[in-house]
Image (cartoon, rainbow, N blue to C red; front, side, top):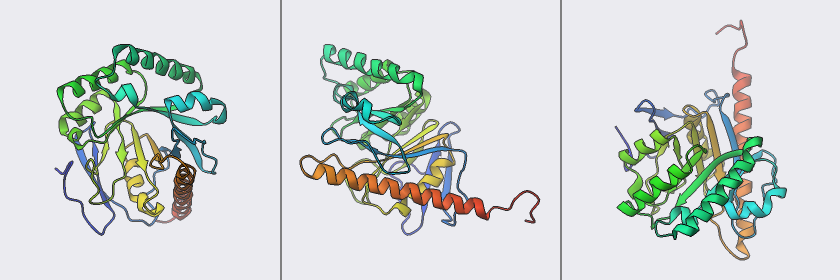
Amino acid sequence: MGGPGAPATSGISRRFFFALDTIQMYSYTSSMDGNSFATTVDLRFGIAVPEVGAAPPRSAGLSTAEFPLGTWKRMKSAWEGELSLRLGGVFADPGAAAVDYARALSECRAEVEALRPSGRLSALLIEFPPSFSYRAAERRHLDRVLKDLEGFPLAAAFLNGEWYSSRVIEGLKRRDVALCLLDLLPGEPGPPSVDIATSSLVYMRCTARRAPAAWIPRLEGACALAERVRVIFDAGFPSGADAASAEASAESSAAALSRLWTERRGASAADRPGPGAPR
């Protein structure tokens, strides 16, 4: 069975998805003809709002957004759609002071509880930096954070490849935590590029470096396994004058992919024979 670190196939639209509820690997090859699109999956496109120079998405077709927890507190009135909250700082720091962690946890829970009645919260995304290695202190911290946030929809992004093991993946599956799927170019340093379904949610973080059509095979595969798919484009979180242009580029890419997906799904529906039609 292939897995993290398995060689990628070059030149064809082929990805491997792991459905860990059945411990079965699905090999999915996209026909790219629009005839295999899922129509019942809750799929939404959006952007990751940066800490500085933040603005919610405005493009048609974008119905979700990822906010840093601190930014969301300042921007509640500017966005009425679905959202996910990105947690970093003490949530990803095993050396954080207990009082700081307790304060941040309390604030996070308060924000989530306020969102519960509206059903607008898609996920809490906990982002662990490259320095968050697979060591005892980090493992204990991860266990603590996941226990403290149990009951909320969770996704975890690991930027250190040491976490991509069968033991960790199985643990995420048992806790119903989505592994955040990252957008890495071939040869780029970072965690291995794998598509794994560890819960009913597939959470994908994309960048504007790829053409929108390049994402279609991954979306088809994700929709074959998940009840909910969230596709979030980020701008790389630059600072200064580049922040606004980078965010605009991310939003443009997300909107383009949303339109392409809608167009191809519509073409698929038009091509399907109606009731009683000859096959």
